[in-house]
Image (cartoon, rainbow, N blue to C red; front, side, top):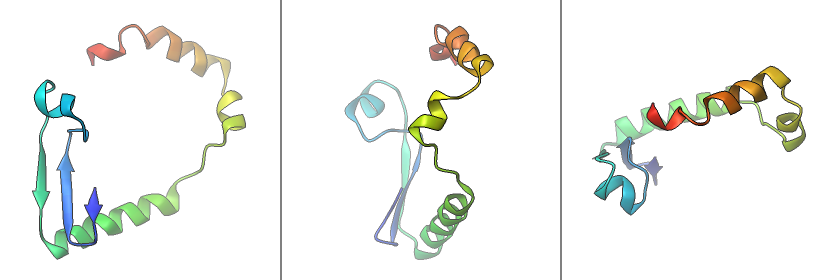
Length: 79
């Protein structure tokens, strides 16, 4: 996450109490204009290449994909 083109938060923690208190996750706060500019540039590149997933498209995904999602649901928390 970048804020106002001058600060970045990089890491695995979500912005909630559980991530900090229970999940042993951590973020680094970076105050460096060049690093933040680089992260912003990466985000813009990703955004240009991304494809919006409309609700109808999601509902029409192949049956094999839906089946695979259901099969892994009980164990996905282990990974």
